[in-house]
Length: 294
Image: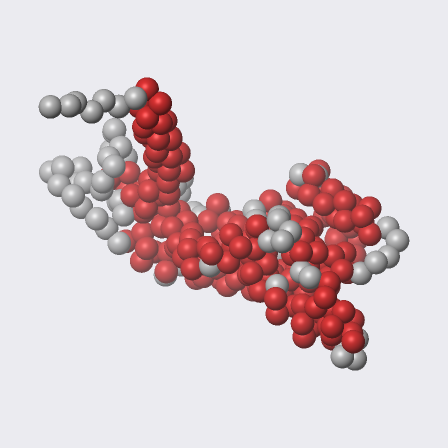
């Protein structure tokens, strides 16, 4: 009876595959554990949060049995300040996304399809805006906005465009550049103006890129903290969710409502994760658009 042996090459391929999946599992645990710990902490009472060592599942401090509480979520939903900051974040992120897509689509069409002097330097100048950290431009931007007398909400919208618009323009430019030139030429032969060719022919084809850039711009504006904290120091009613969560206060002096903070973070994060999961195929298609010409 013949005995089948595995050659060194197949054995090496097998161990490489095992090592690869082991690395993937470790990376997934590293990335997902903070979010799991936030969920775990949001279902704990103050007494459970003070337990040493901490438990991976909410447990009763006396009996050790599994014990979940919803009081942190009830307190967050009853907090009118948190609901106001959530409304501000949704409105600001929606406005920033709309402006970024509108301006970015026109800029992407011009840089991707039209011919004019200085097109390449303009594209790299736009991209270079992402090289500067927020702290580097915060002081000067705050001084300019204060001198112009702009209120907190419009100032945040303008400042958020500094880091959402360059990415939007770059992705949409690559997408427009990958579209066949025959489309716009055929539209012009039929009597369409460049704007009509852009609006009626090319723009509908950029749906994957628009969804990608729009969703990423929305998430970036929704989660922004530094500009929001600075511009709302004298206008607390305009605070956004990240600032509102960071400034959570307890019901008594020197109390740190860690459970409520975790509950609010979970409530804010879960909808964004759901949006990414729903549009993940369009996000991948939009990010890879223009990478290969065919």
